[in-house]
Image 1 (cartoon, rainbow, N blue to C red):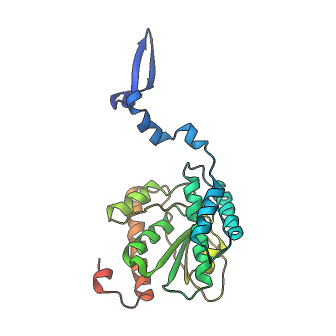
Image 2: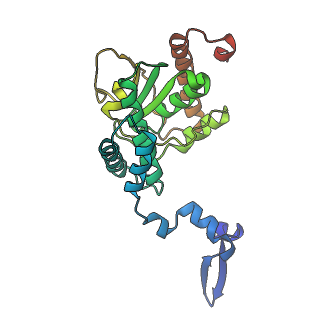
Image 3: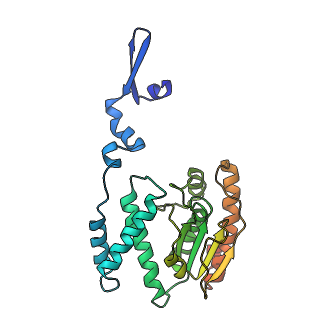
Length: 249
């Protein structure tokens, strides 16, 4: 409480031998942003609105019933693993990613697609995906998933990527689904055993990489650099016209 008081986040009012603390009014919005406002946490996602908007987006590709089913299923899967106040926007993003994957299966591929899978989709797979997105740009489609996804990406992973200029962006842990596996040309697994379904015509790689969960930042950096070397090697195989500037350290 002393640290919060010194930071100006709470007020202090002595009462005899007792001291009462209260949230400083001028910082109420800041604290709500950190802890989450109860009215926001209790708000229910408007799945009908999300489905209607995605139906417009995929008009001529998927019917309204297909879109609505994927929105509901994506919401159900996410709420089993997270209580994030951003579940509505994450549902929309997750459903869209799955619909994009379905569309890709039925259309000639314009670029190679890579799926990174680990257990929690909060460490190794996010490290690999962020690095590949940054190096490949729009030349490679990148997806991630977890066999037992966590609620949020590990902060040490976000920090380790930010240090080298590779943003996580709006990524979040997502459950593993058949549609993203079917849409991938290369499936890279990292510690998730046989949880990933196997389909003909896909290339499967198993990278033995230590899990960064619970590791100090220095160890997460070592894991990040190991993954980066592997990702650079994979990129050079996927995109034949890589320039030396893209692949240099």
